[in-house]
Amino acid sequence: MTNSRSFAFLLLLSVSLAASATALSFEREDPELQVCRRQCRQQRQLSEREQRECERRCEDYAREKEERERGERGREREDLLGEERPEERLQQCQRRCEAEHGRDPGQRSRCQRRCQERYQEEQRERERGRETDDERREETRERLQVCRRKCEREAEGPREESECRRRCQERYQEEERREGREADPQREEEEEEEREGERHRGGRNPYFFDQESFQHRIRTQHGSVRVLERFTRRSDLLRGIEKYRLGFMEFNPNAFVLPHHLDADTIFYVVKGRGTLTIVREENNRETLGIRKGDILRIRAGSMVYLVNQDDNEKLFIAKILRTVATPGVLREYFAVGGENPESFLRSFSSEILEAAFKAPRESLEKMFRHQKGAIVQASKEQVRAMSRRSSEGGGHWPFGESSRTFNLLGKRPSISSRHGQLFEADAGDYRELEDLDIQVSFTNITGGSMAAPFYNTRSTKLSMVVNGEGYFEMACPHVSREGEERRERGEEEGERREGQGQQRQVHYQKMRSRLSCGTAFLVPAGHPVSIVASSNQNLQVICFEINARDNRRLFLAGKNSILKQLEREAKELSFNAPAKEVEEFLGRQEETAFVDGPERRSEQQREEKRLPLGSILDFAGF
Image 1 (tube, rainbow, N blue to C red):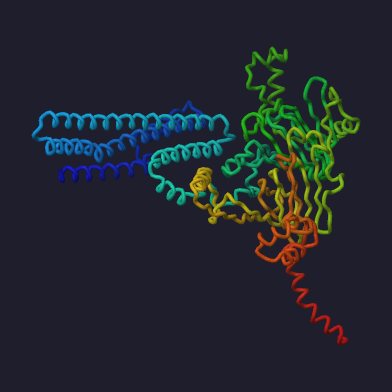
Image 2: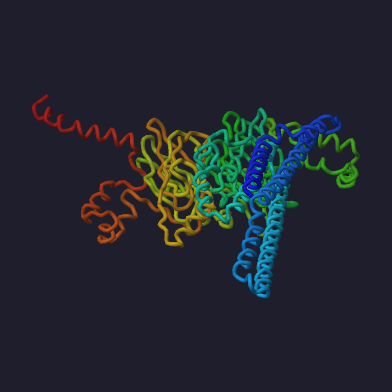
């Protein structure tokens, strides 16, 4: 028996080492994968994209083969370690029957029969468990394939597709690990602590986006359109806003953007410049609008739009938020006219369809849909003047009294105004087109050296884009660990489960801080306290799109309007563990509202206060 156990241990060790080696290097050493890839590359008739797809299928096959082999090796290990145990129990049971009922053949026979029945039941249970495990693995593999196919359909380019497939593979591996840990909650907790926050890409602040996070969707010598990466690509914490995207548009003087439509509702805010924008929805329904700095404009999904920068010298700069209507977070531009770049979507139809639809020969179709190059082109001064004149004349008209007229945010009286800054806000009461989107638009101008006192929003999530100046923001976040990495949803659920079992859960808030400059963006989820600080040498200007704006309240934690002042005296004493009078004096020190002196200016004031007594003495002495 000892020799057989030694042999089983050695065999198990060799199987485990082989499994580890294969798992670490199947892509590098699997000859079948190498041959498959080589055959893909040797097929000259395939395009570069088709070759990549061919190689991807090779890799998928290799992974699935490795997973199957890993499952078989796991069953071998189970056999080596576990199959003797029921048999040993059977033998022990039978020996016990011999010892206890040796003189009574009938009793001994019945006892041994019960031993045999128990052994057979154990065997059946093991088989059922194996079948269940196999079914579960098959279901998990099927979910992986569905996820990969979704990546192929929805990704906006090779880079995003690769990232999407990587996340699919991570989820698949996590499911496998979770299934293997179900019987060992202590090990599950240890692994969760080791991996906590790995989702956070490179330890970056998941709520801050630098200029490189905005990807060019359109770029020519006459202008560009950039859109922020999908929020869920940065962090799973942002799933609640995955259908939204942020973007910047910049157009040179007299630049013209070709007619197109989007599968998203869009809100424009004109940061700088002036232009003419035309929206076409239906037959005889065209509206031409003049737009200028401070204007807010809503464009409904599917509306055909084109615009021109009507200024001869100044660029037209627009910030926008998009709410996708097809696949959450996936955005597509559709150009009806174009040539090589952008390509007209009409070219996807066969020549027969187009000839019949337009009642035109093929030569005319070729001329119309192949001539144009670039989604943004240069317009002549005469063309610009003609389009601008139509906007001043009122353009077309909408049926049923519906209109997409603009609302100028800067023309409204500011909600908050002081020497430290101004806040301009527009909601559905100001601009009806914001109502069904449940969005509020605001513009914040913080004076250099000042800051917005810490505050939080009760319901809305604030998507902010810096349009001028520099500074930084700080935010308290309960979803991020001390190491600056996000807590995964399963970890949150585990914490809630422990709470339900009477275990205390530690409350911790991580400080999220990032530098702000023109062209960067940051997010403030509902309930998260935040403060925004302008650099000392220039104002910080931020355009904000606040989603879930209905019934939202902005609550300040410091300053003249601090909500902490509303606490009852007894609540203040209990909360701060100090006399109520002392707490009230502390909360009453800051007399400014909303915008206050920033840290640098406060430090200067303190230095001045320290020098003041000496100056007073010198003044008294006549110096």
